[in-house]
Image (tube, one colour):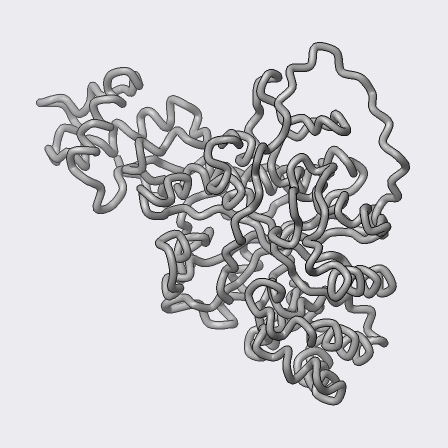
Length: 457
């Protein structure tokens, strides 16, 4: 499934940056909590794309998911082999329908019924289908099929009526105009009467969520320096740089919460206050073109995804709705090395196709998700293929201002051999990484270092 690239967002200003010396309690007009706000624990699932070289077999994939304690996945289209392998695993599936099937499903209720009979009934509930996602960002990536999307939803819902499986369609954040500050956000007016309003009525009447693909990464890259990187990565900001909605005085400590509240305000402006939001995609690329995609790095990907997982599992909610936390599907489980497009398009995964980690998340203590978090057994070494001059500069910094213990790589000492820049850099990088407590960002060195579970000593 191609990752939709959001259209440029109007960002005259992310927020009014206010230095507030006295915080006043602001009463917002009554907002009904979205339905099912307390019905289920929020979860973090993963998206599984298939444009991967040497992807795991279905049986191995299920064992890998279980080993990582992943309980929810998103499949972009039905795969009978994977669905069969998931039988009895307890792993829930958000089952997708590709855009190219909307013509058939939206034109014929019989075709929709046949789709349910083929892809849902043989598997559910032994393989729990938690929801069905019809299409993906249809208004912007497949607009010719938009008139067929609502008929497809209605026909599929009718065929699923006895199963209580929610059904919706993932939208990109481009569906929302003027999203910052959140209180002034509204849906794209060209879509409201013909699509958004009927969709929200359908979601409200069927107790289904509004599905959104939300990427603070793309908001940051289009903000031209207005949004602080730390705010996109869930890092704390000093009070003078906190993002404050001037209309509500709600404080936003991260971009994702601001995006969610922009969606809630957009629905409220159309008199819908009972529809929950399911984040069907969010994530951060670990690598990209150094000139065109400078924020795509392992350090930033680790920081965003680790902090996002903690934020969800801590049930932090949003400033507008602190009582409810949206569940999230992290994009994505594997690097899709066969994907076309910018360099970063191939580098959104937590793991390579052979299930070795691209980087290690720092999520210890967050409910067991991604259980192979071996942050107590990790090391920092020189990146394969790193530029020798950059390695030397990083080595000099680590042994100098970084105050790494480099005594053992001096001539005549036990770790002097092999006498190569790469070997010495790995020693110095790991010394610094261990000294700093293995915190996120301590194994970066301008992109020439990586975390590994193999002891370099």
